[in-house]
Length: 312
View: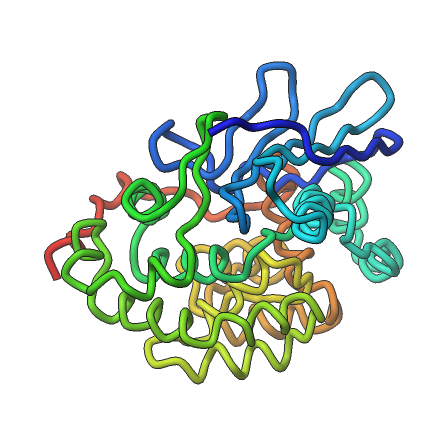
């Protein structure tokens, strides 16, 4: 398939979303790849074949491009370019965040040292939801492997060595026993199929940033709880999403901001003053922990073995 530049936008250089890597990894089945000279590219479905979005720094500018078939309608090209802007974090709203965390000395210092986390948004809610579902009850490595295998099996490849997340039609038509080859349990397969049926509704909610409405819709799906809903919304740009039930986050917040507590209830209490940006505060604390700026729970043993969820 011939691929050409369909659209380009050039903006002044600014920090990009730190989440742009989400979906990268092994070459087969990846939706995102790092560009040799800096920047990232990702694949998205299009009406005339998959499209490739590229975001790369160039001197004092950021160049955004959309690659794909010349038969792609102009409206789809513009939507893809807007998707590139959101993916790079250009649509993230940091209004009031610095003032919100300023009263807390640790957060104020962390913000000064590592900067405010910029949240990018995946262009499609279906990919965000799919990756959240695949991350249920398993380690990140297993979830990433399942996602790569699913994209390799049902996604659309491009000449740029990245593949687009499966379409609603291909995912909805894949039986549970076929998805099992990717380590996807029956409960997760059922949730993916249910989402595919109402995908247009979820995409509308994501575009309108109707997070409360989307949360209610997501948790109405069997097998989807608060954690999966929050993870879905977080990767769509919801700065207030808190993944209740996560294995690591309560301890991360409890050790950094509290009295070393490790439960969800205390975590929610500690995050309550930052309503509207609770998910961003979590990302800030995680980045600060990576730099040794906050106290973290020490490791007391080896990493857990990978899950046996492929055999459920």
